Amino acid sequence: MKKNKVLKWFFGVQDTVDEYVKKEIGRISTKTVFILFIFELFYVGLTYFFANSGLITDFESYFYLTLFIQFIGIVVIFLGFLMLNFNRKNSIPFEVTNQKERENIISLLKKKYVRSAPISFLIFLSISTVFDFSKNNLFKQMFTLQKMTGAVIWTILFSLIMYSFEKGEIRIAKEMK
Amino acid sequence: MNRVREYRRAKKLSQMALAEEIGVARQTINLIENGKYNPSLDLCLKLAWVLDTDLNTLFWRDEDEEE
Image 1 (cartoon, helix red, strand yellow):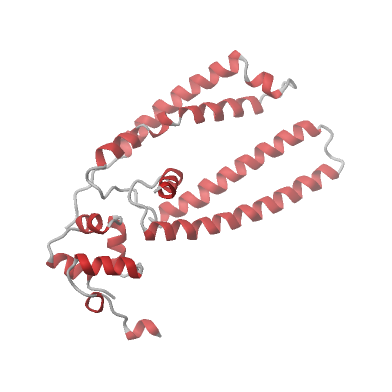
Image 2 (tube, one colour; image 1 turned 60 degrees about the vertical axis):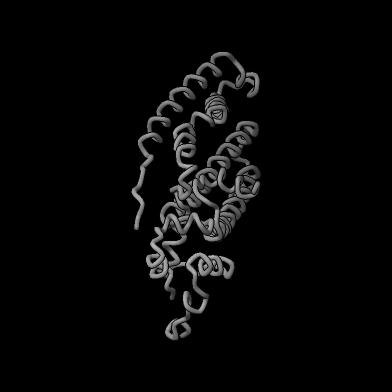
């Protein structure tokens, strides 16, 4: 089913998305959405308060900075809360029941970060440009040869390191009787 | 409370084989056997069918649990 494929991709479930997994995903996702809502509520409030306090003079930099902090905040809450909860409670099976799918999934796991290299590239490119405070146009600066070469090098290094790491993380368990 | 483990062993099935048979993860079978997860009626029926028994034999409710 398409819905299950999306859940598998988004939450990194390797095995069957059965009723237990769906229930756990629903329970923990609800908590995460609630925490994200609280974060957004306070963050927008604080951003508005500082913008009107007279302390801010450079509104363009303030806009980029608040957007960047918001992005990082959402990622940290999502990964920190959702994924740690899944891992701690062992809610999601990180093992494969179906014998036929094993080889295929082992290969997919190894190449997980290699397949997501374009996303890594975009993240590195955006972060390196956002932290460049040379007052030039953001998009002009983003697509310079220097920035793009730097992002390509970081992506290659990151993908290689993560490939070696993921390769070492795969365990072949013996079947329990 | 349930007798899933007992019936699974009697049928000489591993958790993995039973999970594959009814289309769930092995972890779910383990949780059901240890009483940590209450499966849906549909899953209970599948378990009963694969283990060649009926629902009343496989699952029951302890009086202590009701309190």
